[in-house]
Image 1 (cartoon, helix red, strand yellow):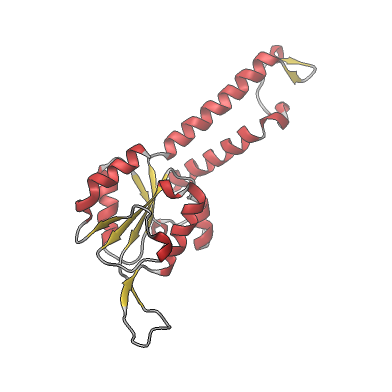
Image 2: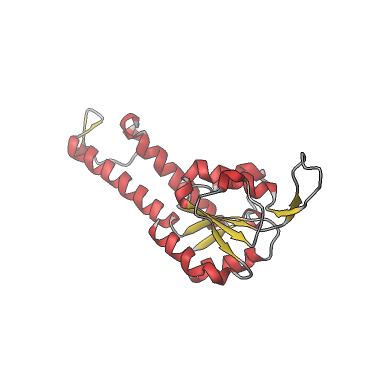
Length: 202
């Protein structure tokens, strides 16, 4: 996980560098004397520097492309999903497997959320019912933390890059209706081809 943390930190630094390149103090960088005039970069050197930063930024983002954030509850289907993603050449990120200096749950999500894709596993791990009903009808629901993380990634990377895998007849918030959720019954192998298609083309 140390390598994973390094990659995410590197891309964060490069993004910051690229966005603030106009105001950089170039004295901090190893610039040849013949590329400066009165401690100011010559135009060709400045252009090459910006191109280099943008190249590193693209390389870092390309490196991140293989990582997929997995949103999950208590279902054993999480292990199956990790295996399927691995076979696709992806590196699944799960919060529980991150040991990052006792960071809080929210801080971990924020740190490792700069991914291209997130996959939410909506499985019936909890029971729930409508309070106003006279007759209590309990239905299987995804855990609240799963819904919270799902909303976070909708806002962070967009709903087009956040894939929902829904098991059986799990009860979903009405806000998730019509989002192209992928439903499966018993095994994630039922939808692995569709999942791979979405990860490749989105």
